[in-house]
Length: 241
Image (cartoon, rainbow, N blue to C red; front, side, top):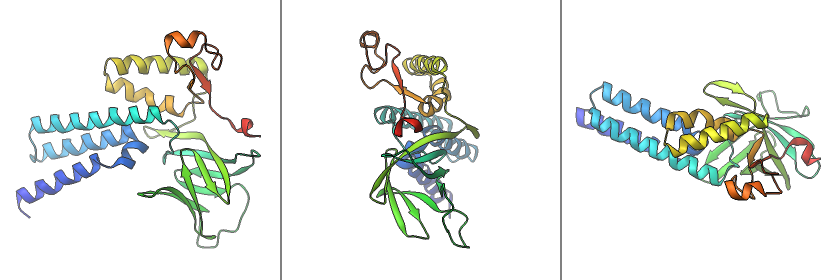
């Protein structure tokens, strides 16, 4: 393989990563960081010059902003790096847990000697599904709802890996308010580094922006749904009972 072929192959890998929609939506920060690491390696190996590296990093940044805008419009999104309680919607009964895409029943169900877990979540062109290997049952995950056994189960996030650290969702309203305000300022100023530090904490918090007033200054003051706070508590385990 000559130099031009090697360069073409490496650039194609970068483009494939840039176009990896699942990766970008599952982990926008990780997607952007990976792209920047790839361009740094390309530049270090003299496969691209500094201007090309800058342009490619700008494309990665643009993809990041596009992803977070899309996620803001559709916040209920399954995260492979998160841990969830899987709770039956109609009675609040805990079916099991999903941790980093590995599913285990809450009760001791036979899984077979060759299995160390009960199921696994897979993502592909046809969507996200839960495969229970032993029983061959397959559930479909849409947003944060699992459809399986003819029933619906809510996925309630209890933990997320953020920058390599396992963190529980923020449940203090004052902290959440401060993070939302900081993110808004960072977004307006296009301060990507500040924004990406707070966004995962906001997304995984026990709260979400009020769907009625959308945290807008005027409507927020008179909003009955959020009582003027601009945000509401997400569906909790006790709310399903």
